[in-house]
Length: 138
Length: 109
Image 1 (tube, helix red, strand yellow):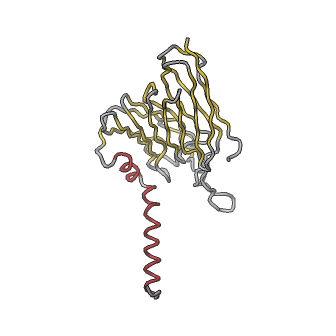
Image 2 (tube, rainbow over the protein chains, first blue to last red; image 1 turned 90 degrees about the vertical axis):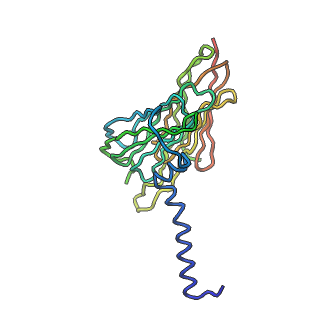
Image 3 (cartoon, helix red, strand yellow; image 1 turned 30 degrees about the vertical axis):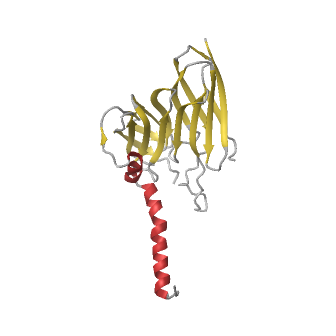
């Protein structure tokens, strides 16, 4: 291909599109959810997400997820620059399908937990956390 | 290898066979999110623990994928069944390829 001014512009534009796509895929909550559920419908039910109503410090917000029959639980912080928080996979010797950890929240937002149950269906729970000081160190 | 990484794990020393125990783990790690900037306005590159696993005698208990939204010094608490005497192995995987592990023996009464 002859490298004309027009071709060079086209190549530049397509390179930008290709480079831009994976970045977007990693940052929107919808994409992260779709990757986890494979587009399956998400219902309500056997999952609880425990998070404080008000967190003074967004750097360490204690959360707990629990479900009776989950195989996997994904936690998302919808208002964070990178929404995925953690994915818990429970093995054979897990006594309960529950875990707790501490997360960072950039500001007041909804935290969502989605569980994949043993029968292959998905359920979700959400909690709104008010954050006084954000945890992104901006 | 990130500096000052020290895993800490709390597991009871003994349990009854088939009993459920609570395990608490913490590893000191700065969990640099890749969002922060230094004094000159340059982005500090991401450096986190991206995966944690716990196994007991070769059987998996929990396998967690960690993202930058996990706090500094990642703390995890979960429950495990102890079918027999043995050893819990805890493994943390760092972004830079380092693997930190520790193990705890448990006896059955």
